Amino acid sequence: MESFYARHMQILDSGRAEEWAEQFTEDAVFDVPTLPEPVRGRSGLVASVREGRRKLAESGQRHRHWQGVMDIRPQGDGTLSVRAYTQVLASTVGEAPEDGRSWLHRVCVCEDVLVVEGETFLVRSRKVTRDDLD
Image 1 (cartoon, rainbow, N blue to C red):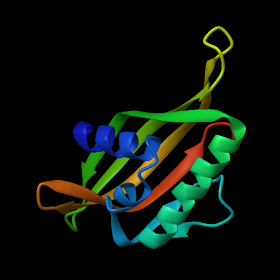
Image 2 (image 1 turned 120 degrees about the vertical axis):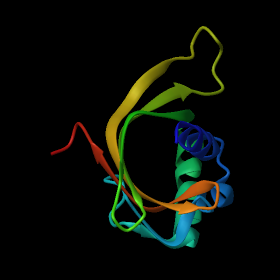
Image 3 (image 1 turned 90 degrees about the horizontal axis):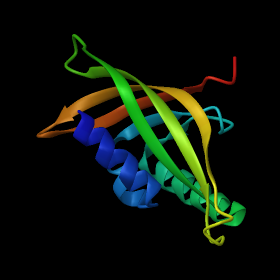
């Protein structure tokens, strides 16, 4: 499980939108409080990642996601429920080394429903909540 999430987050952070979306089911739902409504389906996920990367580039930032403290529970329908803590780390990009900085951008809870697909997993749904919001 840790390998799945390590690869999943590194793919996201490197901006490989299509590859990241392939780790979701075709009808996946991605619900995050930074978007006005949940993203549905792989094409929606690709578009969302591309837009997010564009905004980060404009702001001169790079984000890295770290996910851990996973509570994994098998469900009766064969899926897995995963609740994990996620930290988003931000860094300035393109500045002189002495001017660059990094900081903890967000602390979140990520709740996934995973389906088993051969030797790996696909995300059927993801709900992200932020610690700084009610």
